[in-house]
Every structure is written in structure tokens, then in C-alpha cells.
Image (cartoon, rainbow, N blue to C red; front, side, top):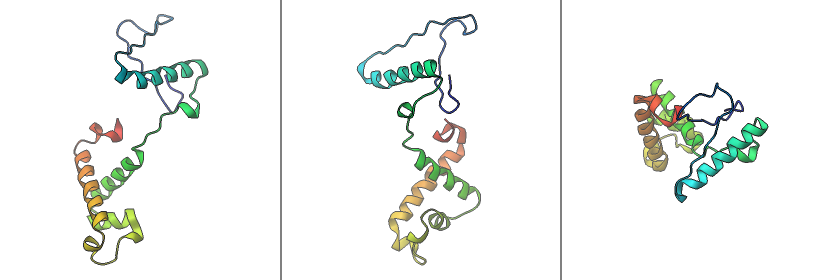
Length: 132
């Protein structure tokens, strides 16, 4: 089910959705999994009743900003950019014009981590978080 932006997946264990009304079961086993499953059930009910989710119920993707950086670095790598080019593009004026590795070690380390992660994800792009 979807409101066009967010989707809730229903897994069928038996039968079909084409035959008419469907019995929906929601199983919660253990306290560790209860809270996220309870939230998913609330979202499902709201989506079924109202046809959409209010802003207060829309999930927030906390890692999206980092994924965007990884994608940008992946694009830069495929375009042939080196780490200094990437650092300048991402962090602009914060990168010193000369001896950037010595004068900006935290940015250098950050770019190295981003490059390493982007290369790993580029080796099998559909397996990573970018397209989950």
C-alpha cells in the first residue's frame, strides 16, 4: 500500500488479495521488536483509513545526508576526480589551497572514509543502502 511517497509492504503467507476481504494479522513477538512493529501497524491503519500518512507519522531517514555524500563521492570517482578534488568540491573554502593534507587532516580522513565506502558500494551498487 502506498500514498505515492511512502509504501508499506504486506507479506502474504497464503492465498491472494484478489478474492475479496483479507484477514490481516500483525504478530509481535518479544519486547525488542514491539515498538517498530507497533509504529508500522499505526501507519498501516492510517494509510488504509485515510489514504495517506500525516507528516507526524512519516518516517525520517537519518542517514540520507550521508548517503547523498557517498553518492556524490561515487560520481566523482567515476568521473576521475582525486581525493583533493573531492574535498574541495564537498567542503569548498574550508580546504586550504596548499598542503591540504597536512593543514586539513580531519577533512582528508573524512574524504578517505567516503572514498573507501563509495568504492565498496560501487562494486555492487544495488546491494547497498542507496537502492534498498
